[in-house]
Image (cartoon, rainbow, N blue to C red; front, side, top):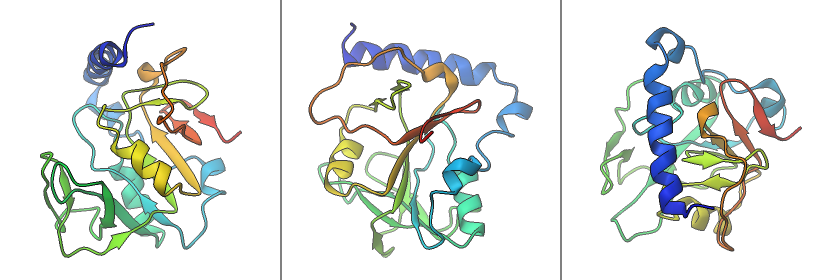
Amino acid sequence: MPSKSELRRTLRAARKAHVEALPDSIRGLLFHRPPTPLLARIGDEAVIGLYHTGPYEAPAAGYARFFHDAGHTLALPRFVSRDAPMVFAHHSDPYDDSDLSVGPYGMLQPEAAAATLVPDVLFVPLIGFTDACVRLGQGGGHYDRWLAEHRPALAIGLAWDAQLMAALPTEAHDMPLDAVITPTRMYGLT
């Protein structure tokens, strides 16, 4: 089996090619509303953790707007510095990103004054996944460390169908997900 680094390189290229091949009109229709079986497992008061989408990642903004409109509190990752642990902080404006600023990794994140939160449900980005909900992340270990310390009621990956792998190498610190959602199906939580 290829190393995680080799897989990340291959899967990033496949993800990029997949997304670039999608017409804008189709891409704009995807990931707006979580699947009903998943919604049935999320309480009305749940704090929802999401991510600010990077290039070619499965978009999380539609889910952020959906949960915001349903009355949920939203949280996004925040880093004080590149060597600080990832925390989640309140995100109040999923329509305009007016409460976000650029963090140490160049991604938008809640500003320093935003309250720190611990999500009850966490949607995570990924590079690759298996049908058993094994996740291959970016390689920094931020989500694995956070999940090991603060396991939410549900941890769900958002992915493109092209990111599905038959198998992925795992290590003791790799945290599995409860589900992975793609534009065509949901893995896990059956």
